[in-house]
Length: 366
Image 1 (tube, rainbow, N blue to C red):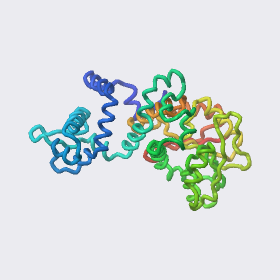
Image 2: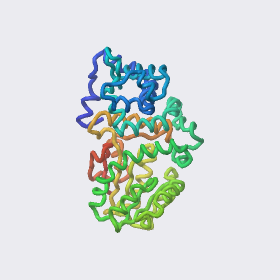
Image 3: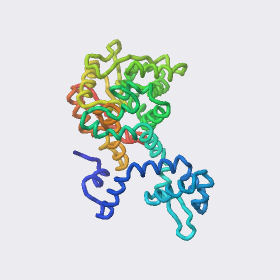
Image 4: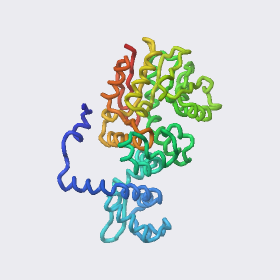
C-alpha cells in the first residue's frame, strides 16, 4: 500500500510514548461522551463566550450567560478540561479557550463533520457491528426501510437532510472552481453528469461555459429534487435528466448523444468494487477516443495531511452502517485497478483541489 510522503510518517511507525498511547486508548473508550460534550459546548455557545471574553469566565458567569444550571455547566466544563478544549486558571478559576477549542469553534470542516456525524451517523453507528457482519446498512433502519440511503434521501427528516447535503456539498463545492478549469481545458459541448444529485455541478458548468449541454443521470427521485433546485435559473434550459438505477446492471448509459466528458464527482465511493466495475464498463461502452472520464474523489491516500486521511477513512463507516453497507472512501490504487479492468486507463491525476483534498482521475478509453 503506497502512501503520500506526509502520510507515511504517521502510518508506518508507532510515534507515541507508552503513556501517550494509553491516554489515546482511554480517549477512544470515552469517544461518544467526548463527541457529545464538545458538540454541546458549541451548541450552547460556551466556546463562543470564552473566545469573546478578555480574561476568561467563571462557571457562575457561564451559567448566567447560557441559562444552564450550575450542575450542567460544571460537568461540561470539567469534561472539556480533560478533553482539552478549555483551560483554567487555578487562582481565578476562570476558563479560557484552548487551541483545540478554537478549532472546534471556527473550523468549518469540524462543524460540517460534527453536524453530519450527529444527525446522520451517530445512532446508526450503534449497528456498525451488525452492518459489518451482514454486509448491509443496518443503521439505516433508524430512518426508514430503504435498501440504501439514496432511495430515502428525499424523505429524511429536514435536519438530517440539511446535514447530509451540507456534508456532501461542503467537500465538493470547494473543488468546483479548479475542477471546471480541468474539464473545460478540452473542447466540451456535451457533458454527462453521473450521479448529479441536486444539479449544483451542472449549474456551475452551464454558467462557466455558455455552449455546454449537461445531462444529469441519477435516480428518478433525485432528478425531481434537481429540477426543483434548478427551476428558473439561468442555464437550466441546457440541463436535462436521465433516470436510471445504476445498481440495475441491465440499465444502460444514454446513447442519444456523443459525450465529450463524463463526470463522476463523489459518486463511485457510493458503490462496492463490483458495482463500480459495472458502472465503469457501461461508461466505457459509450466513450469515444476523444471522450474523457473525470472521476473526482477524496482518495484517502492522496491527502497532504494526516487529519484529512483520518476523516476519510472514518467516513467509510458511514457507508458501512448508513449508506449502503458495502462501499467506502477508496485508496487510489484500488480505484485505478477498477478503471483499468473496465478497459480504460488513467491519463493523469490532478491532486489537492479545494479544501477537501480532492483528486481528479482523468481517464481515456484504451
